[in-house]
Length: 486
View 1 (cartoon, one colour):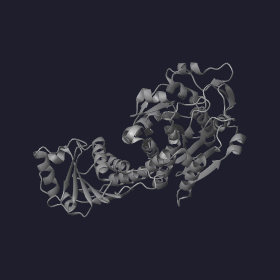
View 2 (view 1 turned 90 degrees about the horizontal axis):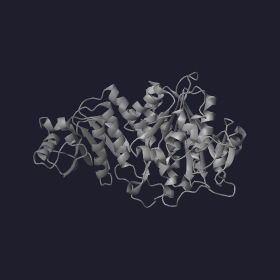
View 3 (view 1 turned 180 degrees about the horizontal axis):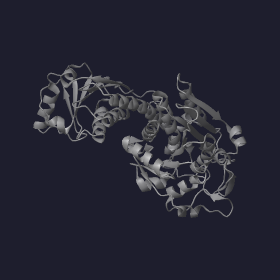
View 4 (view 1 turned 180 degrees about the vertical axis):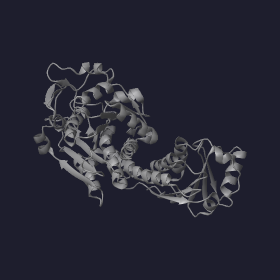
């Protein structure tokens, strides 16, 4: 999807050539004097009761008098807030994306806030996305370009918001694309190649290193290696480094869970719904998406991305319940349940992050079904050892309309992780399962380093008719990194 920011007063927008024109009608627009064709059309529709400015309401019109575009869509944008604009644009683009319109104008009657403009871009990109990688006969989305028309010249703040939104949209699209690919089209090696492709882009300021089984074994990542034992697909440990600030500046480390397929291992999952376990690498995909946005925006910050990627399958060499493995940190782990594998690959990656002396570590993982029970599919779970980091991430999530919610990390939750045969067990009981998983990870965070864990099991993908990756929490991560750079 291509985006362009234009200055067009309503009278000019009515004369603009486009396949379709979406007019965002806010409550203020509805009350204003109708002295142009678009406002007059909206006023008539409201007066007759066929339309209202309520967020998400739509009224398609064809060959409207005084308007050049053959297709006009009135879209209610409520109070003009970012949330309302997102609902309006999402509904409008979903209606027109399948054609025949190829180019659309998205028209604001009043100058939007930077947050509302950002929401419009992200909503349009999200609504227009369609997965086609393994669907060669699928009809492509007809809509390929959107011009966002403002009634006055864009301020510096609006131009910045637009640039950030388009880059974030690219990152989200990349994350969705890799999250949606079947496991045989998104192996650890292919995920590593995707990371290398980002780094190879001209002027990316990104370096990429990929470690294989021998290097991982030499490092002593016994927990990570244990998860991969049952699969014929080789593991990969992906290290991305974005250098946007002076080398003396400590980086932010992003750690993404990259289980490209999770059968549960010997503790195998039920067959129903197991196909969705291709989404178990959405944490890794979100790190790739964040780096794609960094590549485009070039903010003054240093960022490290760490992705432990492998499959979790049963096999003759697979780790068994009761096995004890030694992690990179030197701590031994009793593997009581091989389906609690995400924490095993992450714990070694968290310990590895220490070598970069990061200012903060944020891991992102589809870690627990318990988090879905706690928070549903609206907010990601947020665990943090540092109040300032937690606040910054929560603020970034609210600003990006990609929200998270703080969860507890009381020491008492770790009691269930005690083991008679190792330093720690990889699971506790069912109560507070997402919390005990976070407490397990906390043991492996470099001492004194602010750390946050985002459990995205409920937000990374959708099931049912809308089955597919969401690209979350790329928006949150990019917003956080940009705020830190500022």
